[in-house]
Length: 317
Length: 190
Image (cartoon, rainbow over all chains, first blue to last red; front, side):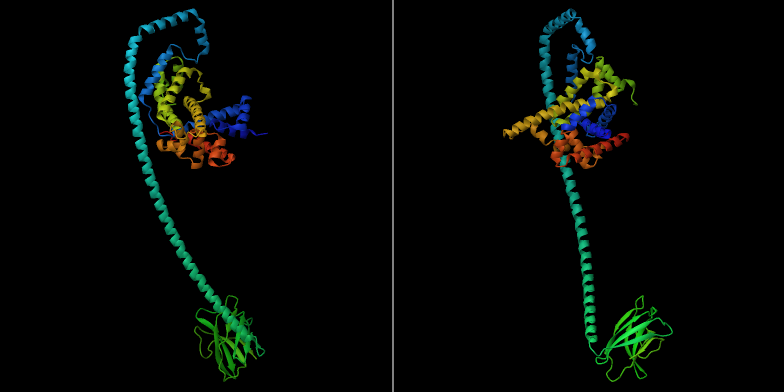
């Protein structure tokens, strides 16, 4: 039903004096059946438990107690210790002799009666003094305990204040971090809204029947690159998407050109991501010109009014 | 251990069993403070603790011959006697107190009150150090309620509002730790 390890665990609680109910009945039956292992664990646990009283701050008992104990065992000596029952029985076995001895003791007792009464009176005074001393010791002890308690309470209060201060500082820190985070989120939201507005604008621009698609092909420096330009001739603006353009050096930027006849007009600056992708919304270009071709060149950062760098993409209407 | 044979408590008890009063005096001097401290923690009242101290040593005088080394150290034997006598007294006080409470005579201030507030009051009076102080609070509490206040496992579970299994686990964990400290020579000794 129960494995032996569990008995050993019950033994510990039994030694602690805390086993009760069904557990207690079962364990006692188990012990009664004889179990050296449990007996051993009991002994061992009892030794361990001596640590508990030994962990208390020692209090010295009043000396009067020792005097009383010694007095009592002296009185006891006439009737020897109970721990030797066999010898005791033999002693009683002397029967008549013992009775005579007891009679003698009683007689002597009567003789000493007066003296003893006087002694008892003195003892009474001494006991009263001892009692008073014990009372004072107790009062002193109680005062010490009160002082100790007050000091402890003070210390606890100080600890609590310190911990509250630390907590407050921590909360302020957290609040500050939350404020910063809020600012950051607001910034991101504003950016997203701006981007959304821009996309709306682009969509509106392109959702018209006049829109034309211009394919831009990669040239010698990067033949794999491509571009698609959605061009709205009526509004003179458009949207450029690229793919496969090489990453530009830090001091360079891509520039889109709208070409009328042989004259290139700047149509926007852009950068590309790692995949060479870019999305550029073109500015509104001058009305006077009729644009037929579009090209992308690599230019110094900041852009230039006329192309100077290598041409990477080119396409025509 | 390192004490001279004449001061060895086992030897002293053997002498006491043969009626040696001087040995008894030495045995008393060696353990009276421990027994008294323990008694005070158990019963709370100095007067009760003094009576218990007296009773226990009288029992030592009368029953030294029944002490057997195989059943444990003199100290464990002595402390077991102290505790079992004190717990008997505590239980009868508690019963009396329950009767008093049921007949609504709770106004009487006496031993009952001291027993009821047991753990708290004694913690104020007797500070704990050594091995016990090194136990985690939860383990210390269950051991103290059982060993010092004489509560059974179920009573402790009720008082703490914890499942019985939890109480038992904490007791065993506490004892396990104490066993560890026992190896440590500094444990428990002031």
